[in-house]
Length: 324
Length: 141
Image (cartoon, rainbow over all chains, first blue to last red; front, side, top):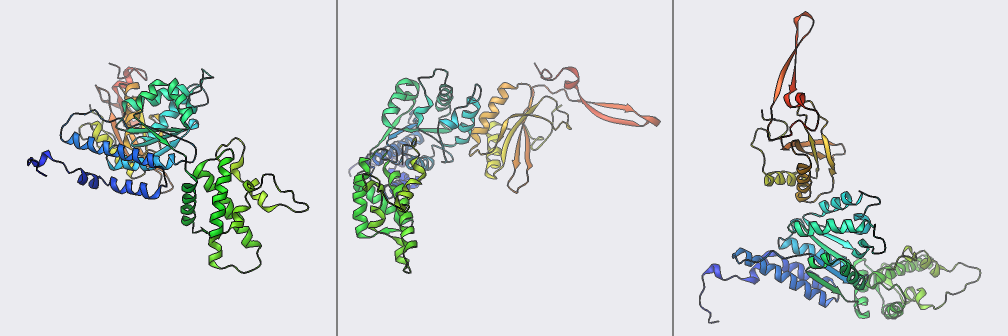
């Protein structure tokens, strides 16, 4: 390079800053541990870069307004919004934008009270707990109920807005929810929209990514598919996606839980002694017993259908839950 | 007369930064921070009014400082103190208590002498502020 030599204070080694802040480590782990989500990762990198540059600029005395850090994560269920919020808190903490880097995850119930005068103390209490870290409001659109004008949610929103504006140093708020409903929420709360700088959209996972996620989950639990089981699982994903209430990685996790149950039952019922290897392997039979492979429930005469039972007892199948 | 109760009371009044640092210390020790206020400064008055609930799961001093600001605003002319409860051993005890707010003028205490049987004398303290006005108006300016 033929640049003129500048005084040491005038050149800043951004790479060194980056290493020093320890953000590289978090971002690398983000890349390595989270499957897919390329647009989200790029967005996180952008935000991290902006914050890093801002920090350097501030040290050099270049005036810039303190960055607004409040974010909104939109995407379908099971696309990693909560996981990313945890990582985001870590990044913000390493860069010194929040002091503690803990995440307080709340929903409407934690913020909105049951009767007049109950909401403000409740919301303030949650805010106090979240100070120094990140407040993650899941399904934030439930805070606002346009059909009921006496709803206390509006009060919670106002307190939230006040703190988001006045105590930016103390607290970062991340709102999360489905994209379309968040849009409607922002339309009716323009104040909220204008205070949120970063909108991050989470795409759905492809089948290949979900299979990869499944393999990582199983590896974490010391399980694995055999070759036929793996093929059956691809089939399973194909079937499952077409069914209602498909919740990406969360559906995969629940499906794997049920497959583990079936595997346990199969080993338990089998008369032969089991090897350590057998305890780790999920076979095609464990996968294909899922009710998603059977258009109509199999009618069995005289005996209890074990596979169907396992699915029936799945706690996630309560009808009002939309994420099983 | 300047009231000296609790920790740090012979030091100049703590600044907000110093108060936050003390709270930070308490939180690091996993103590719960509570705010109390009163306008009866008698040393044997242990029943101060609580400002909200003790803050049991704070992670950062900012939350307690916000509550303190609210308390100062709502209760001007009161003594305000911060207590730190330690519940980690299974029993609870106040580990640290210090005054973080006081009225602008503190008239102090009068020594009251009461003569008993056989010319014995009993001594007690009485706050001028408490004697002259009812509760809530004692330090009003």
